[in-house]
Amino acid sequence: MKKDLRSQNWFGKKGKDGFIYRAWMKNQGIPDYEFRGKPVIGICNTWSELTPCNAHFKELAEAVKRGVIEAGGLPLEFPVMSLGETLIKPTAMLYRNLASMDVEESIRANPLDGVVLMCGCDKTTPSLVMGACSVDIPTIVVSGGAMLTGKFRNQDIGTSDLWRFSEDVRSGIMSEEELNMAEAGMCRSRGHCAVMGTASSMACMVEALGLSLPGNAAIPAVDANRKVLAQLSGKRIVEMVREDLKLSDLLTRYAFENAIRVNAAIGGSTNFVIHLLAIAGRIGVPLTLEDMDIFSRNIPLIANIQPSGKYFMEDFYYAGGLPAVMKQIENHLHTDCLTANGKKLSENIQKTKSWNNDVIAPVDQPVNKRSGIVVLKGNLCENGSVIKPSAASPHLMKHTGKAVVFENIEDYKARINDPLLEADENSVLVLKNAGPKGYPGMPEVGNMGLPTKLLARGITDMVRISDGRMSGTGFGTVVLHVSPEAAENGTFSLIENGDMIELDVEKRVLNLLVGEAELDRRKVNRAAFRNPFTRGYARLYVDHVEQADKGADFDFLKGGSGSDVSRDSH
Ligand code: FES
Ligand code: MG
Figure (cartoon, rainbow, N blue to C red):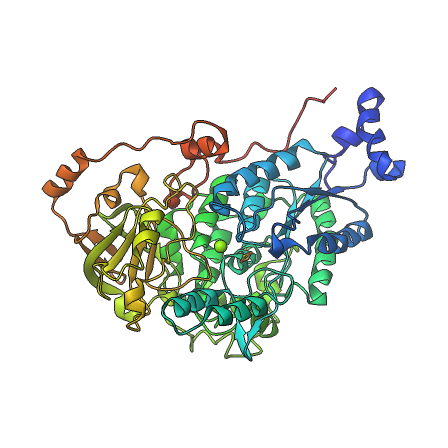
């Protein structure tokens, strides 16, 4: 048992200060004894009706509270900035770092001994974990769970189908009316995207890192077991406070290596790369972009879930969820790692197995031998770029083609439907200025739709390269996160229409086949990038955001500031 509860620096005070800290809390009907030495547990809630994936979190928080009370703690729920993928313009990623600052300061400034992070939609997981890491008090994650599988004309559908439907409408295979019907059938229940998109990948990431109870990632949002897990997590965080089990005790270098391997086995999102690097930066564990490739090599795809596979998160749960995946790749994991329930990973997965080999395949009969994240290097991306082979087309993994360059997203939208666009299936589509600084915020536009005239000919994939990101639900032979981004004046910014580009995934190479002299000539004519924002958050963001290969965090947010606050408010 930890000797002093942090919260007693507020509620345990005598005189004027103690009066102020307790008296106003009592307006909520909390009896005096609650303030006299109970662990105070913050429930950091990203509930918002503007974040539909997290719209059920008020109810879920009630289950957490039951657990906290049961274990003898005092639960206090508080809101933080909630980032929904679907509504926020220009992209929720622009605000990930802002939300993380909100979380960090809210935890540190308040009388909390432990915190439960309520995470769901894509950015709500990394922003909360990043912020909590910079404070480092006992912390547990409760994910919101995925939606039930969507239905359309007796077919299972999920977010990944959105990209297919959209191309089908553009190529005339599907009508707008049919698209509307699909829209009504896809999001059948509360919860986040029902495929292995970024939200599900993040839920798997926290479970693999040991930051949640086992089984957290896969339970559907509306399954009664989700509430059971929430209650057990509430109970457990009180024990974690008593054991003083902090994030830094769980987040070792080995835990990060486990997360990378698990992300490969599940065919997890490319966004995982950026978020994990940012989290490592906050907790102070050295981790590089190259580690994503090194540790995911030799890990096959065993979770047969869209977009890399066939099934949905609901099926994943019934098949055994993440513990069953980790059991399969046990020999590749550091199973000595400690997890939030106080047990080693080896104990957590000991009795698990796959209940459906079609959904969670045996490691020696994988869904795809290729998986994980490949990090590409070359003169086109001096600091690296990434591709997810399990979601790409095998015939394009080694490809040289002519660049069709779009200077920005407006240029792309203006020309992609043009029948005169000079492009064929061997072309390489290049989208510039979709990076952290250039857009700003690095949106999910990297899996740009193909030229309409090629869709009409039945072409379904082409090599695409950008400094942006792709939705975790997306797929295709898409090279992402080019660093330095166009706005940072890397070679990527110099590509012109007709240049030859060489991609070789096996060799991990991405090159612009243009001579040095010509590139030097182009450099002379290139205008220097200036922050276009004169005020507000966007100005701060563009001034301080780091490149994708470093996790796109702010330069001044690296590391943590601990949990001590010595001065009182009055
Ligand atoms: Fe929230 Fe996909 S939109 S998880
Ligand atoms: Mg997304």
